[in-house]
Image (cartoon, rainbow, N blue to C red; front, side):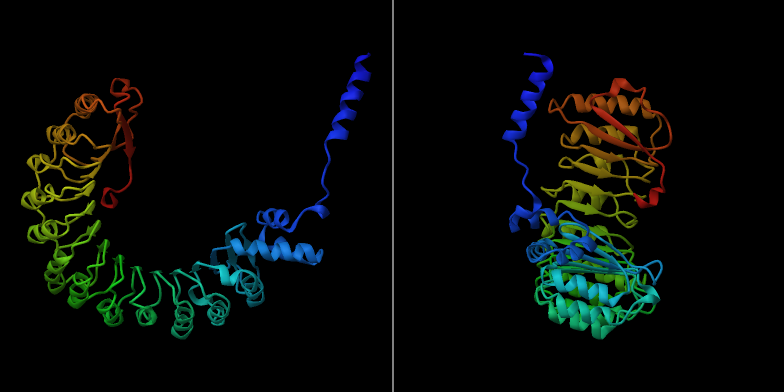
Length: 427
């Protein structure tokens, strides 16, 4: 048999054995799985092809769980993006918003409204409230006019909201907090309230927020009552109070109430209100604490750190930019996996190496701007300490500078050296 004839025979056999199914013969299930990967505008257009495609296309919207509506760069232009479970609308066009939400609104669980400033269209919120009744997470970012009535309607139509994040919004945003359900909300994040914001509605919410597990306030206006109410929330597992305003002694003194919390796993504090006395109370009551950040807490001394060392489950500790510590403060931190002490100039090579030797589970340490006299000798000692563990771990050492450490092969595979040049205040 000639080679050409053999080739033709094989090709004919393949053609006879393989049957291509026309798209018109695909089931609704196959089509809607296919349509999941089609861009949002096309998913709407294909409904016009035939009734089967219309059914399959509408079925595909059931997978959409996240919706983000963002201010357009050009108010005359709309950008519609997203596939499968995510839809992004950069538009002020209410017809487009209605068209999308009429198809997927009842399936949305995560909703975000971002970067509107003065362009915000007041009718957007009522449309969302009309179609979306199963939202669990709401993010509102950079909204100049929060439109209390619209947010009230949105919160009332979504009784199962569990998490709310409000970032850099108008000073009136505090009034919108009154519409949250304190009995059901589990997570609240408030970041950057503009000057002269009131803490009244936040305090009223915190009085009854017995389901709250996560609370983050950053650059937010509070008063002494706010901190006291937080100290009564025994449901809290993750608390982050950072750069609170105003920076006054009455608020600093109220921080002692944080020591009453008993179920914290993660705690991040800064400011003059964090003292050794507070840390002792935290250690006595929050024995489940796994992550603690005290960056910039200048009133914390060696005595406070000794108390912290007795926490049995502590895995992560950040004491960056603390000036009242010394090498002895590092002796008993034996349970750590992650450690940051950037800006602690009183920590020398000897203290850092001692910490590494005494902490067999340590896998990452930030030592930017510390009092390290000889980096290479410290790296060598650190590598030796890690080698002695005999558990196969690699220690990441994050240091400051632009030096090329790739030639320090003697430290591998026990130590990985990473350089970092950003402002150490953020570490």
